[in-house]
Image 1 (cartoon, helix red, strand yellow):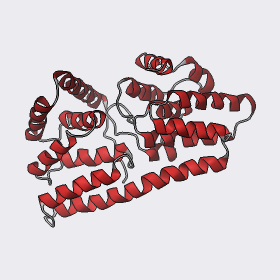
Image 2 (cartoon, one colour):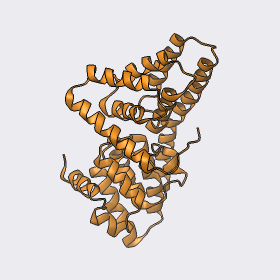
Image 3 (cartoon, helix red, strand yellow):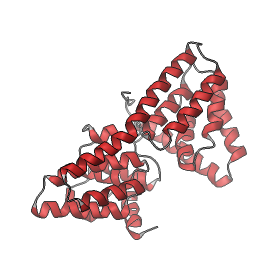
Amino acid sequence: MPRTKVLWLNAAMGQKLPPFVRATLGAPSDMAAHFMECGALNTNLSLSPGGRLVITDDLLDGTVVDAAALSMAAIVARDGQVARAALIPLGVAASRMTGSERNKYERLFALIEDSAFAPQVRDSAEALLRAGFREARIRELAAELGGSVGPARARYRAFLDVIRQLTEGQISEVAFLDEFLDFTREVAGKLDFGIYAMCIDRLFVSEQIALSVKAAMLREVLTYPPLIRRELITTLLASPQAVPELRQLARTELTARLDPRQQTEIRLYTLLKRSWQARRPTSDSIAT
């Protein structure tokens, strides 16, 4: 692992920002520290411990406004769409700066280019830096992001109608599972992972979805890449709303499919999410 990433992770474990960012953008906020904790834990960003996952809208509509938190999101986000979205408000801020303040943002973007976990954001940071934070280049980046996320969002909304048809008995379970697989293939890598995860989470706990459908979805999720699988499965295992039969099936399948190290990792992340839930005073919501 590059030395710069090691420094960021060491800082995250201590709940501190690196000295450069403290000097550049001021004292860390709780959200910035939380994002760094997520990076150190090798998990997706969430708005708060135990809260919903961050989506691009949160970084573009002002939900996350702290510059240090935006910087952390750009560097440690595993979701490339989210990481690139964090660059846009930072780029807008940089375009309005002059002199020494502009130099600070140039150093920040150079650090993002060197250290970001998501390869897409490294390329975007380099392009904005090379363009001198021109507004036209920022708009291009926003358009590129929208062109990728927008169609996937539309496909997600269409899939919500398929879910409704299933709950109303208008389509069979087999037809629904075909739609689910098609939806997953079409949006893979194009939709905010937070939105996709929210969709899966709600299906797993819905009282209107048959256990047989949930079991088939579970087996599909178990074939996903390790980081995605871990995020989705640990949320299921930690959920008090999921029926015991589904949680037990998940544990059985994990024992059969994963090696002991992977099983231990799943158990630890499940315990972490349960502890986050215990600390969370209210539930988070999301507009779709």
